[in-house]
Image (cartoon, rainbow, N blue to C red; front, side):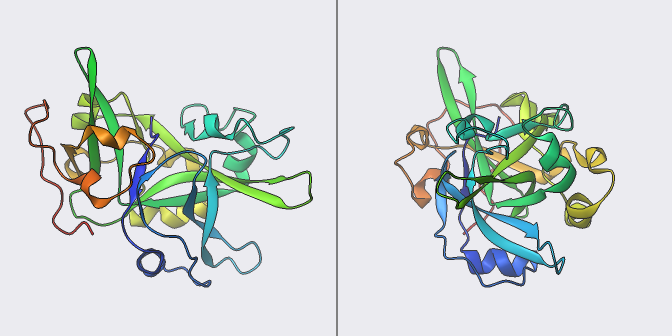
Length: 235
């Protein structure tokens, strides 16, 4: 599952890449984004239809929830069941979003230990992952807005790391995901040749660690034979 990711670019660069029109949010880059932390999402403005880049909290809280404590467990939504699960079906029908990231982390079992890997697009461009967002009214009357990342079965080399992966949408599918009538048809693994992955330091497993060294290749790691170097165009 996608439980950690990195957003190495600044908000201004992401706003330009996704063509958003609102004021650029003030959210610093992160090399170790974890559930319950704030992240950037691209949504449609309900009145103008323009793309907006907004700051929401990772871990979806359904609008009908009694409290927000279960949000961390809703960091991901399985693409195979997202249209039926009570926690996600309303958002899937009405509140889809793009989750920008420069890459994500996954852990591969190596005997009794696990080796972390980073995964990004070989082009070094930002990923646009399929997401859902929701609003939950807090007891004080303010709104908490949260999001979840949709996953699908991993394919190709990605399956060497984990059986699941986030749904990565190509640019030509962005509008269809945000507005289309058949979003389920877009929930598929990315083409295998588009992705690069490489082993990274074990300290990425500690949420408090957050620096560019986390996406550097770990030369001492045990890893599959088919590996890549980090894309040179990553920030």
